[in-house]
Length: 53
Image (cartoon, rainbow, N blue to C red; front, side, top):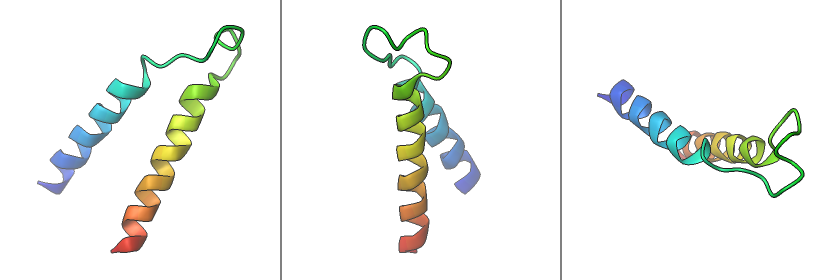
């Protein structure tokens, strides 16, 4: 059950992150700063949750 809930959480996370776009001028950059910040924030939240246990 834990694996299924983690997969669903990951799908929900990417469903929210993928439509996000940076402001004009950054869309054509090799790395989208909005997505990078969202991924780093998500990893930080996951680490904080694991450390709380």
